[in-house]
View 1 (cartoon, rainbow, N blue to C red):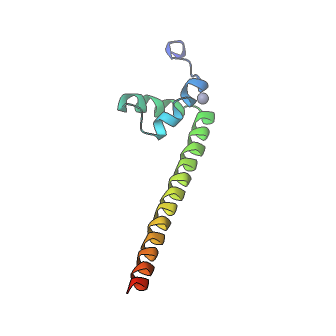
View 2 (tube, rainbow, N blue to C red):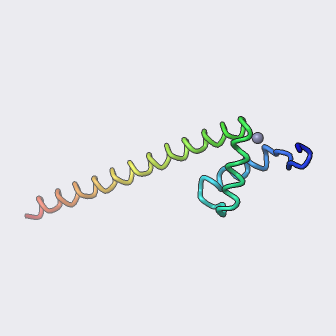
Length: 84
Ligand SMILES: [Zn+2]
């Protein structure tokens, strides 16, 4: 049974981690990818780390984006006040 299985290749899987997180994989590839990483603790761990890092980054970006908008609003308000 085991002989027929495609040998797990960590490097190959890990090279797809970023593609998977960016949603660049086709649904077929994604199913295969998720199956593979769930069979290997090392790959799963790496995937989890990258995933939470990506989430952390997007949270940071969102915050900065909101802050920028907020700053813009304040600037507009200030401008209005001074021009009146
Ligand atoms: Zn692996």
